[in-house]
Image (cartoon, rainbow, N blue to C red; front, side):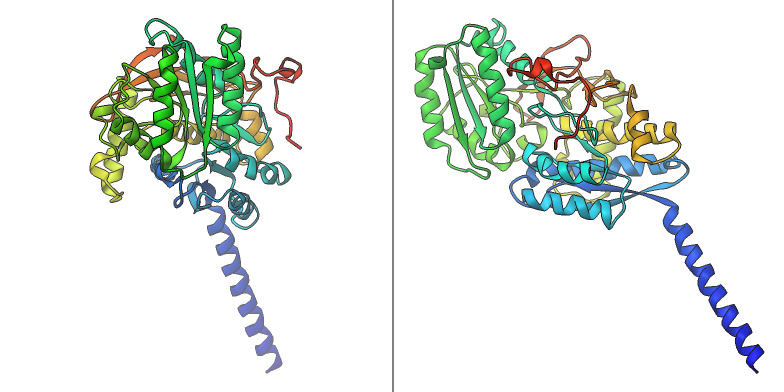
Length: 421
């Protein structure tokens, strides 16, 4: 009797062990990928499409067999445009969900919030949006533009004959680190070109700001002092009332051109763009660029939006941070294949020099030392259909300068990543 009970107990424990092993095997059959974007709050207008693009890219990779023979499993969290919550959600992804990599953040304040967490836990973050530079972490790969790949070329264009030969500059931004640091760089750059402080106006508004009546009136008044351009680092859903107010007050691009660094096709979807024709945006990709890779990219995205029933799928558009998300995920997958593992230290090493034929029409390269992509620079004019016509672009990708030469002391900083704390 005792022997039979022992046999039963042994069989039961063996079965449980086998079940445990099967669960372990099942769990090991996927590679978890974190997606950290605001799906609610003021930044949802910009970030929701990046979450959807990440999911499309993961589906695309999985359809071709995944990575290292395993399917990618997305883990989506919503930090809700709440900067401290980004850090909490990032920690959750790394410690609870055990993701191999995270794709996420838009604002620099959200990236600064998660950075100490990813450095502490040796996580890997791919950041897909243009930013102010002044950072080069071993735990981040920056697939958006540094200032010399967007802000500086845009202002140079505004000063040129083709760009309107501007002599005065109204720097309008949302009140946080990216606009303030970018404008610090731009002010120093303008000084180097002989522009005096009296010809530079700097104004900031809080996140979610909606009343631009007085600001646009002040832009009109400031422009009476000479050829003026507006450089906009306004972020999130505040762009909608800002552009509506430009139209309301009849401020046309032929009078005072606005160049935006955080407005693309997605942000213009909810606006009548006819009164905004001729205003500018500086990016490294536009949906309107013509090449076979982009044709497929745009077609795949539109088909995905319809298949998944995304909001306003019939007017689905691509934009620069979406392209950067797409490139970043593919580059990470290539690096994992090269490394033969998802181990962060080995993937970091394998990322150096990775190349990808991007929808921009250029072969993009991850720099071998500074964790930034070499990217082309493009300036586009808003068209009445909400798309952009490219009016200027570089001949080839430009190497990023994360430490801007227009900030004192940067020439002494190393050209390789160092932890921020």
